[in-house]
Each structure stands twice: as structure tokens, then as C-alpha cells.
Image (cartoon, rainbow, N blue to C red; front, top):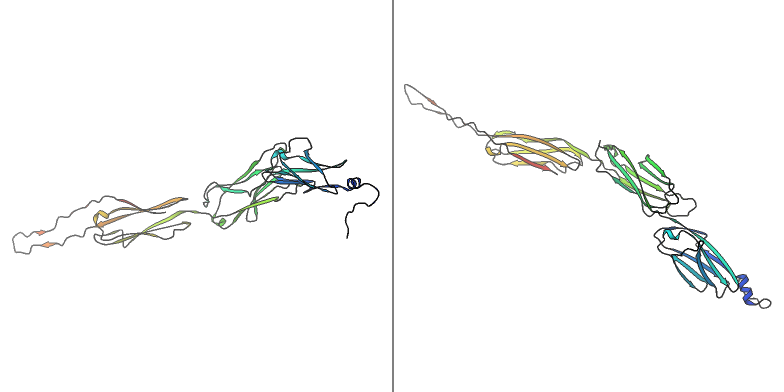
Length: 327
């Protein structure tokens, strides 16, 4: 069994402890701290019964943190991490007449969220659309790399170069314009973003967002079918059925039924298919006719026979615009 033991003879115990005492600082000689998070720097002492601790920056600026010391350990808590914490921090430990010092560098970065993909509007086949993706609150953004892939094909990429002296969180954007087609439906937009800072062991160094494409097709080829006919006798029933192409498709065709039609039902009927991506319309003219009365003949013998016909009436009808919409 191994361990440290005080000498039984020779040098005094205090001098022996002073020679053996050591200081370790953690988590290492450098730490990559994300702005807004919390970081704890720890100074550990071995072989010193009553150590004395002190913390400072290399330029003797304010610590902007809280120090807690107990026994053989002292911690400096930086919460939340800010730009003012970008320093070399020194932990000085005094044990008797001996003094030791350890240093740790706090390097800052900010890469808190996945990139955000935005569209200028709904995807409509054949229409231009602007795709933009942004990376919020990045620091430092020198060598920040953004790509946009559709499937496995790279559509656009960019590497940002920064003024390293600028201390601020930046939101970086990249935009591109493309014309979607129905073949793009089901394909995936992928936006991998990298912050490859070689001298920092930051996590993560890459973030990614995805979005599945759905391409709409504006309504078209709208039809308005009339059954049995658009010209029929008064008292008959009629069905008018509206249908249209487009994506997404209509859940069902729309039918308007008129029972026991009258002259007043004559008019122009309009079907409008209204979607977010466009409007299509079709109209039909419905004519309701009155059946002619029976012909009456006077058959009594006479010198001057007259055939009596009923007065023929020519009805004019009002045009009624009646819309039934498909939403």
C-alpha cells in the first residue's frame, strides 16, 4: 500500500509539507465556455494542511465571478459566462512560505441553436421562392460554414470571415432562390452548419436542420358538369358538380342540387376553387323553360273557322350569380 507519510526524523514536518505540496487546476489549461452558460474553475491542493487561495486575471481586471474556498479546494464560478470572462485566470496558493500558481485560459464561443430554415411563401410548382437559413447568436463567426443541400446535392454554401476584434453575438444568414417542381415533393432540405475552431474543444462543432418539401400546384382545369342538362323544363331537378385539379387535391367534388326548378332558378352559376396558392373558376348558364300549353281547336261547323292558339309568352329571365366555393 502506497501513500505519503511524514518523516520520523530529520527536517521539520512543516518544511516537509512545503516541499511536497502541489497545485492542480481543472478542467485543464484551457476551457471553451459557451456564452450564457456556467463554468466552474477549480484549484486543488495536495500536501498542505492550511492553504491560502487567491484568484486574479492576467491583467488584474475584475473576476466577474464568485470565489468559494474550503479546505484544500477553491472554485471560481462564472455564471452566466459573458464577454468580460474572456481571460487567463490565475489561481495562487500559499502554503507556509511557499507559493504556487496555476493558470487557465477561458476561451469564449456561442453556438447555441440549430440553424433555422425559412421560406418566403408556400412552395408552388413553377413559382420562384426564396429559401433563407439563419444561424442565431454565433461567436466567433470567423470560418463559420453554412451549406444547403437538397437531397445529396449542394445548392449553396458560404464561409464567413469575421473581424476577430469584434465582441458581439451575430446572426448570420444565407439566401437562395429556386423554382420548385412537383418532383421536389418528398425531398429533404438539409442545412449543416459548422463552427470549426481548431484550438477549442467545443461541443457541438456542427449543427443541422432539415425540412421536408411539399410542392403545391395551383388549381386548374376546373369543370362544372350539369346533369341532366343545362336547359330543362320547369319542375325538373338538376345537379351541378364542380371538380378541379391541383395539389393538394380536393377532398371531394362539390355538388349543388336544385329540386323542382322554377323560372327564377335560371341564371349563371359559378364554381370557384379557392386555395392559398391560387383561384380557378368555371361558370355555366342554366335555362329553365315553361312547357307550352295544349293547342285548342274549334270544330263547330261555320263559314269562317278560326284556329285558336294560346298567346305565346317570351319570358325574360334575370341572371342570378350564385357561387359555391371550394375552400
